[in-house]
Image 1 (cartoon, rainbow, N blue to C red):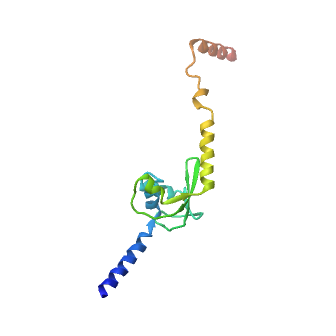
Image 2 (image 1 turned 60 degrees about the horizontal axis):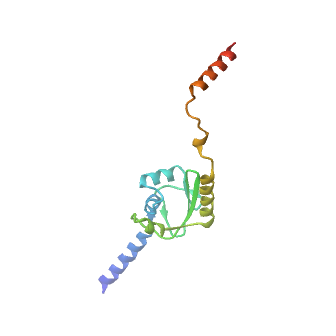
Length: 145
């Protein structure tokens, strides 16, 4: 009987250990960053905030934490729903967090603006023709006089 109580206590400790995961490891497991070192670098540089505060990669993630991630032009705000130390498939990783509605709406607006924006290559004319080069030469010569 005594051994069962010890085993039960050990399993409770193990369960509480499962709830304690480093921030960089959780970001990697949730597939928000490609590698754990990239996640740690983002946390160190301040592009990741937990509950509005700048933090360190070794900070433990808890259920209900609000994580703000600034990547490129878009910022993403997620709430931690589950904790995992292993990187699973994308559908499994998506269950670790829930993106806030205003965050997803903001990212969708940005995606739409980007899609509807002007094509940068349209502004490029390419290399000047021989005729254009002669005109430019005449302009430079007349400006030098």
